[in-house]
Length: 444
Image 1 (cartoon, helix red, strand yellow):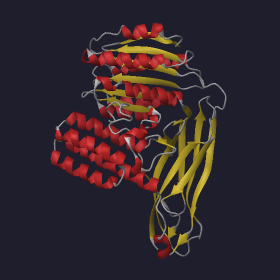
Image 2: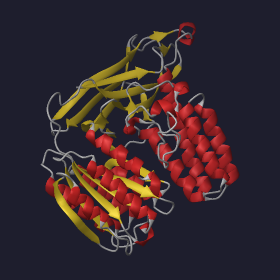
Image 3: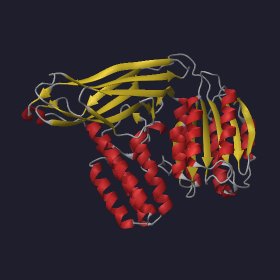
Image 4: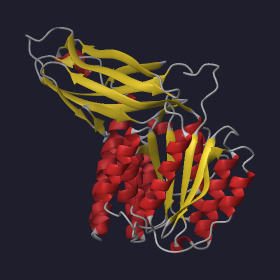
């Protein structure tokens, strides 16, 4: 059902030297895990911030995006609608969507008012998701806000711990921030600990993209709760370059959807001496996961063994292009994190230096180059909040995205080609802007 593989940067070890080798561990569906069976119903709670700051176009677009999602669910899918300002209010208790008319009317009725009791609203959404799901099925809470939690539980550590605790029960949390004033670190950590996705919209009209992407992702999920266990060979140092959460020494990979692959890039370091085996074990991987019907399965184990070669033959080996691209993306992501800190300190000369460094690391990776161009434009405006959000969401996408199984080579990327992909597999050039499908393609 899931093919687990390890691809090395090059196909041998360098004899008589210290080695540094990158390897790409991939998990991809080899067939539809459901076959001809009907996929189980989704169990989704939409939680909408309607505090005073959402007044006007932000709330109009939030309601439009929520109604779009409802209208594209199956009648058997289950949904609850919660709104929150100073207090949480359950507008629609968890139920099958049916024709969606009553649900859409309830969403239309939401009006702006009050403070931002984010935790209360979120917990009400969690409670609804828990009530309507079967024990073996997943629940999902989609939490939207344009502000910062200022009523009830507000401590970021407590919120992240709650997200992890709730995810362990089978209810995951996706977050969506809007505008310039939400707490991006908080929403990213809730989504990360809650094992959901994290999105943001720079403007109100950008909100439809996150809702579309979340809908397509949930509708095409094949496996969830992926846990990747990696064991290095004797004398091999192992570093995972993505920033995945860990659970009992296993990496928590993104949920797997149709056409995608979950992946981890690792760096292996080891000394290669004559007493080492000719065909040396460098890495062992095993994956366990759940189908959408709650069955726990395993892929692997699979192992990486490489022969050793003398320097002349080793130098002639080809380097895997995908590994080079992913490594460059991860390096660029790390540099963007540094640039974000510099922007927060209003050190714009340092920001410009770091973006130039990230551009050099990108090489011929057109997606990274296009993303960096967007960050440069924001930096020239000296927009601290805009830069901070775009930099951190772009870095997060480069590190932890579900990649397309047939991903284009880095130099062949274009917005037009990405427009042909499912929304959850697209490498958008701007994470906070809607993906424009006009003119035979898209521009962030």
